[in-house]
Length: 530
Image 1 (tube, one colour):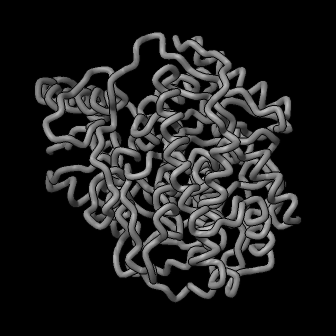
Image 2: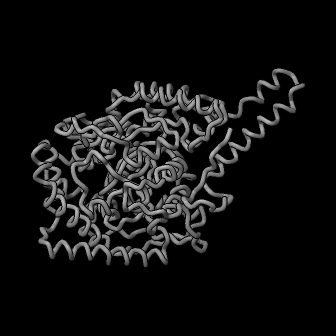
Image 3: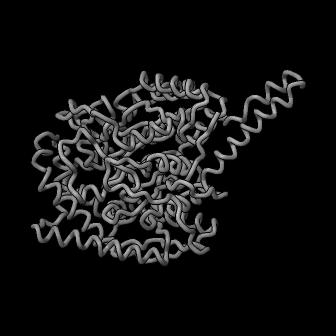
């Protein structure tokens, strides 16, 4: 059996560095290999001893609770088959999804065929991808060959993808088994996952709060134990907001880190919409987010904006300084959010970081630039077509977002795009002193599942007050990780870790330090669901 080594970088020949995140899997594989060679030496011992030596240690939890790292290592070692793992995840999906409506396209039959092929490949000694046999889900707004890509819109349900999107292709090449496609709102343009095509997705923690959006189906699925990794994407918070709502981890990568393209699309996306969006993973642990990020980041020639940047950069001088972002005076902040931020800061300090509360560069101006650019692009190129085929709830949500944007003529739009560069420069200089920023995802408790359909005024409040620190980061193209830190009234609260361009490693290192002390909150969810 030949095993492909886990690598942090995308550059051939880059040396292995001990102590990096994938060391656990590497050690596990060495242990398995050592166990196999040891069996030969033990041939003369009792049969009972041989039997116990054949099987490496496996997690005590049910298979669907295993991490992607654990699952991949167990399949590689032969301790469990890809078919067995896939069957367990399908059973879990069928047990919990009817109440949640997170997975809207069941790919069980295809998944079992792929799992059988994965087991045959292992039996032949073929090379393994990093996610060989690991069940995952894909958000139903990227192309999945032979399947509809409706993006939450009934009028688009007959759009069939002629090929896999780059992120789907990369996951499949790594051996991942896709068990289903997850729900998204109309045009993936709401922070709440509800659509006339597939209906409302519920939060597994509490049906009275939203699962977030637009990757709400992905967040609810992976939190509930459907797939070890969920794919999502983010143009205004659509990875980080669902991660917060569902108590899981994620990374919104730097633009260009993960390639993107939908062959089924009728036209190319406008430039700034492309530059502000990103594909990414949601998972129950930061380690799995790292693993998925590496897989998703592989090159695809169909994306001209893909960047072959290494996944690990030089370590800043210790102790690493973290800026706890001062919250603008006009924000209405719930005490539970302030407490969660302080708790996260304490976790970081205990891990050796130096945390200081600091004013970050013009978060208000950054958010307004995001709003002005994205709304005006949509108004010019997409609004008429979108409003013609969408629901009244979509109209309410869209008009609420639109009301906060300035109306720009061509010179105004050009000045706004130029201002974007000014903001990026200011933040990059800020990261010279503070390599990581600790910020909120939202500053208020998680709202109801259809809160953005109440009124335009409520939408403006949600995006300007509650989610200002999420959407603003998209216009900067910066990486932002979210990790759960605590529960308030039984509902998860996550915090955001922001780093400089292509320094996902720094954001995820800080997230991992918090997770080490806060634990995986979904374990408490699973006890409730049981």
